[in-house]
Image (tube, rainbow, N blue to C red; front, side, top):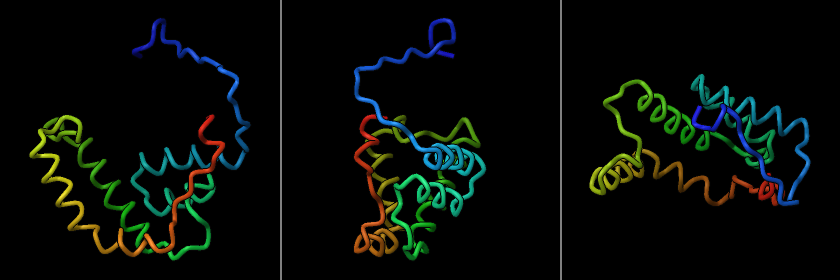
Length: 125
Protein backbone atom coordinates (compact mmCIF):
# COMPACT_ATOMS: atom_id res chain seq x y z
CA UNK A 1 0.00 0.00 0.00
CA UNK A 2 1.37 3.40 -0.90
CA UNK A 3 3.95 2.01 -3.31
CA UNK A 4 3.39 1.79 -7.09
CA UNK A 5 2.07 -1.67 -7.87
CA UNK A 6 2.36 -2.62 -4.20
CA UNK A 7 6.12 -3.02 -4.57
CA UNK A 8 8.91 -1.65 -2.45
CA UNK A 9 11.90 -0.35 -4.37
CA UNK A 10 15.30 -1.06 -2.86
CA UNK A 11 18.32 0.97 -3.95
CA UNK A 12 21.75 -0.48 -3.26
CA UNK A 13 24.46 2.16 -3.06
CA UNK A 14 27.11 -0.40 -2.13
CA UNK A 15 26.90 0.27 1.61
CA UNK A 16 25.63 -3.07 2.80
CA UNK A 17 26.16 -5.18 5.88
CA UNK A 18 25.12 -8.76 6.56
CA UNK A 19 22.48 -9.11 9.26
CA UNK A 20 23.10 -12.08 11.53
CA UNK A 21 20.31 -14.54 12.28
CA UNK A 22 20.06 -13.47 15.94
CA UNK A 23 19.59 -9.84 14.89
CA UNK A 24 16.87 -10.79 12.40
CA UNK A 25 15.11 -12.86 15.05
CA UNK A 26 15.50 -10.02 17.54
CA UNK A 27 13.92 -7.58 15.09
CA UNK A 28 10.95 -9.87 14.48
CA UNK A 29 10.57 -10.38 18.24
CA UNK A 30 10.73 -6.61 18.76
CA UNK A 31 7.96 -5.96 16.24
CA UNK A 32 5.71 -8.60 17.81
CA UNK A 33 6.44 -7.41 21.36
CA UNK A 34 5.44 -3.87 20.38
CA UNK A 35 2.29 -5.13 18.70
CA UNK A 36 1.40 -7.30 21.71
CA UNK A 37 2.43 -4.65 24.28
CA UNK A 38 5.09 -6.81 25.97
CA UNK A 39 7.81 -4.50 27.33
CA UNK A 40 10.02 -7.21 28.87
CA UNK A 41 10.07 -9.10 25.57
CA UNK A 42 10.83 -5.85 23.72
CA UNK A 43 13.87 -5.34 25.95
CA UNK A 44 14.94 -8.96 25.37
CA UNK A 45 14.68 -8.37 21.63
CA UNK A 46 16.73 -5.15 21.83
CA UNK A 47 19.37 -7.05 23.78
CA UNK A 48 19.42 -9.84 21.16
CA UNK A 49 19.88 -7.19 18.46
CA UNK A 50 22.84 -5.65 20.31
CA UNK A 51 21.01 -2.37 20.93
CA UNK A 52 20.52 -2.82 24.68
CA UNK A 53 23.65 -3.58 26.68
CA UNK A 54 23.41 -7.11 28.17
CA UNK A 55 23.61 -7.77 31.89
CA UNK A 56 22.05 -4.51 33.09
CA UNK A 57 19.54 -4.05 35.86
CA UNK A 58 16.60 -3.54 33.53
CA UNK A 59 14.03 -2.38 36.08
CA UNK A 60 14.03 1.25 34.89
CA UNK A 61 14.45 0.31 31.22
CA UNK A 62 11.40 -1.93 31.38
CA UNK A 63 9.36 0.77 33.16
CA UNK A 64 10.26 3.21 30.38
CA UNK A 65 9.37 0.59 27.75
CA UNK A 66 6.06 -0.06 29.51
CA UNK A 67 5.18 3.63 29.38
CA UNK A 68 6.10 4.04 25.72
CA UNK A 69 4.21 0.91 24.69
CA UNK A 70 1.15 1.97 26.69
CA UNK A 71 1.17 5.38 25.02
CA UNK A 72 1.50 3.67 21.63
CA UNK A 73 -1.40 1.30 22.35
CA UNK A 74 -3.56 4.15 23.70
CA UNK A 75 -2.93 6.21 20.56
CA UNK A 76 -3.89 3.25 18.38
CA UNK A 77 -7.04 2.55 20.41
CA UNK A 78 -9.01 5.57 19.27
CA UNK A 79 -9.16 7.77 16.21
CA UNK A 80 -9.59 10.72 18.59
CA UNK A 81 -6.06 10.26 19.95
CA UNK A 82 -3.24 12.08 18.19
CA UNK A 83 0.27 11.07 17.26
CA UNK A 84 2.85 13.56 18.45
CA UNK A 85 3.44 14.87 14.93
CA UNK A 86 -0.29 15.72 14.71
CA UNK A 87 -0.24 17.82 17.88
CA UNK A 88 0.06 21.56 18.16
CA UNK A 89 3.23 23.00 19.67
CA UNK A 90 1.43 23.50 23.00
CA UNK A 91 0.10 19.93 23.04
CA UNK A 92 3.58 18.56 22.28
CA UNK A 93 5.07 20.61 25.09
CA UNK A 94 2.43 19.40 27.57
CA UNK A 95 2.85 15.79 26.45
CA UNK A 96 6.62 15.91 26.83
CA UNK A 97 6.36 17.58 30.23
CA UNK A 98 3.95 14.88 31.44
CA UNK A 99 6.26 12.15 30.09
CA UNK A 100 9.26 13.64 31.92
CA UNK A 101 7.24 13.77 35.14
CA UNK A 102 6.27 10.09 34.79
CA UNK A 103 9.67 8.85 33.69
CA UNK A 104 12.18 11.36 35.01
CA UNK A 105 13.57 9.20 37.81
CA UNK A 106 13.83 6.15 35.54
CA UNK A 107 15.50 8.11 32.76
CA UNK A 108 17.98 9.56 35.24
CA UNK A 109 18.67 6.10 36.73
CA UNK A 110 19.56 4.61 33.35
CA UNK A 111 22.02 7.27 32.19
CA UNK A 112 24.95 6.21 34.36
CA UNK A 113 25.01 2.75 32.76
CA UNK A 114 24.58 4.02 29.19
CA UNK A 115 22.29 1.11 28.39
CA UNK A 116 21.73 1.72 24.70
CA UNK A 117 24.22 0.95 21.98
CA UNK A 118 24.12 1.75 18.30
CA UNK A 119 26.19 -0.87 16.50
CA UNK A 120 28.06 0.89 13.67
CA UNK A 121 26.88 -1.58 11.05
CA UNK A 122 23.26 -0.50 11.63
CA UNK A 123 24.15 2.64 9.71
CA UNK A 124 24.09 0.53 6.54
CA UNK A 125 21.03 -1.61 7.32
